[in-house]
Amino acid sequence: MIYFAKNFYVIFLFTILSCSGNSGSFNYASEEGVSNLAEAEYLDPATEPTSEPIDQIERKLITEGRVSFETSDIETSRAKILQAVNKYKAYISSDEEFNYSEELRNTITVRIPSENFDYFLSEATKGVEKFESKEINVRDVTEEFLDVQARLKTKKELETRYLELLKKADSVSDMLEIERQIGQLRSEIESIEGRLNYLQNRVSFSTLTLTLIQRSSKENEFGKKFKNGFVNGWNNFIYFFVVLTNIWPFILVMVIMIYGIIWYSKKKKKS
Image (cartoon, rainbow, N blue to C red; front, top):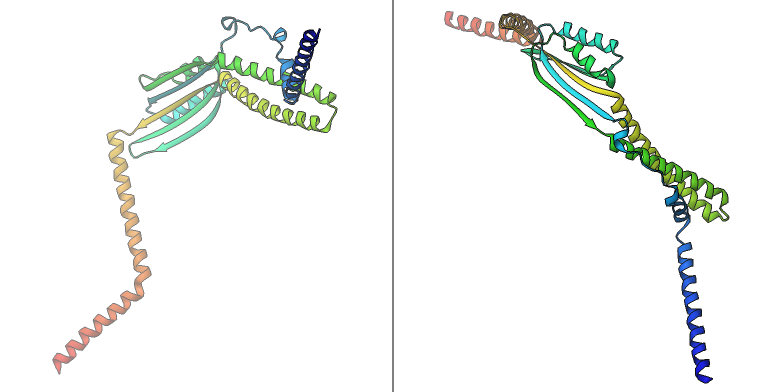
């Protein structure tokens, strides 16, 4: 009887300690904050969306190209490009002109609706016999696009869950914690939306950079050098008289001094 009582006491004590330990674990888990609660309820495997096979999804392609070619008339080639810009609803994002001693360069960067890229390239470079360089790159960003979309959907649904928890919050501390989590989520959502918009823009509008080069012929180069030499000579001639105009008082003093020295020398010889 005494042995049974001792065993009963030990079992009873062990049961109490076990319950106490479980209670402590529960309290620790409850102190993790409302963020774990929201994420745990959101990440229920039963509510996970099924992903569509990537080969059944429209590809997201970014097309970029660079071409450069020589032309005998840079203005005519430029006008042809501008005409193609209007025809295919493109727009110019950059336009630079360089005037070197032996050549003229015009570099134009055009954003073109992706479906019109090939047509635009063909028409803008029509008549070009030889390209100095031509490079067309196509980058598949389908997986990144889908990943960003999924992340955005996840963040927005989690934000909705936080807003629901905010309505049910019983204490000021819980409300402040939930609002802090919502603020952080919205910042992440804006960042993801920015990346998604960037990808969508690069996919919707292809980029083509065209460099037009007009080199001077030897006859034109000689005439240009002759003209430049004549202009430089005339400018130096004018500059010489400008300098004389600035120092004429000193010249006048020097002339008077030289004349005085000569006059004094002649007078001394006569005496």
